[in-house]
Length: 251
Ligand code: B12
Image (cartoon, rainbow, N blue to C red; front, side):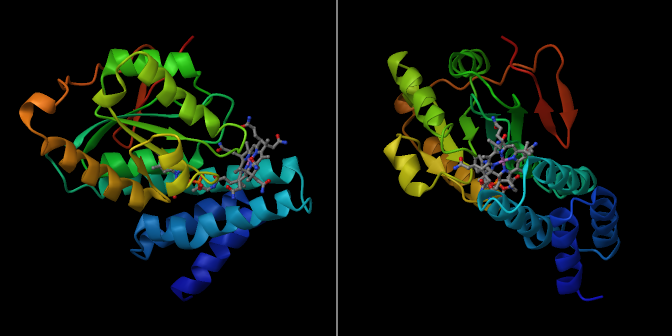
């Protein structure tokens, strides 16, 4: 089977919500030596986008959407550890505190972004989904990351990225952090509109932009640098997967 055929099968398995086949294809791709991100981008993500479009057009409904998401997650469960292993970087590139914003439970894309950042030398704490605006700002203040990364997949929740930035401004600490945003309804123009520093269309771009912004920050004259503090270890029910510390932002 050609790689193209395999990618098509991956997409189809997500479209039909066949988690077992998605997992089997993910395993097969690893056996064939295909880079995990290639399978994600060329196969599984293509499938979930088709599902999203059909859902948006009213051609399929929530149960199917959920099944497709499960299939996608089954594939990622196989591929994520391998993505994380891809790391060749030993020196820390900086620290990241990530979440999906208040009101939003989509986490597939954010997880991929976190895993890729971690694989590329960033220390990443992922606070999960539906993280309240004030709670997130509280966590930012406690953990003092270099980069604050927010994901939003709904047009109704994307404005919450802007609200976090506004709250950081109100507290007079906005300039201490690099703020990056992403997710389907967002864009470079959107990131500028809400006053973020960076936007990434996908995980590869997220890593590129994060590195670029960190390099800029490091090249600033010493006096202009906010004091960087090592991120506080995750609290409570934290778990580590693929180098990413997944911690709940409890209320
Ligand atoms: C899977 C899915 C679900 C799953 C999510 C499972 C999970 N654990 O994540 C489930 C079934 C739970 C779900 C629920 C809902 N969903 Co939904 N869902 C999707 C779908 C099909 C795919 C999302 C996805 O995983 N994509 C694959 C990943 C890899 O891509 P990604 O998320 O875009 O992430 C990439 C980039 O955006 C970027 N990125 C992402 N985050 C970040 C962060 C940073 C900092 C950076 C730099 C980059 C970055 O990098 C990622 C990797 O490449 C989308 C359709 C779509 N086109 O997005 C709809 C979609 C987002 N959902 C939609 C809707 C309406 C809903 C529901 C409201 C449905 C309902 N009636 O209940 C609920 C929302 C509940 C809530 N409060 O959040 C709509 C939103 C419409 C809108 N205008 O807002 C969409 C667009 C479908 C549609 N066409 O109508 N959904």
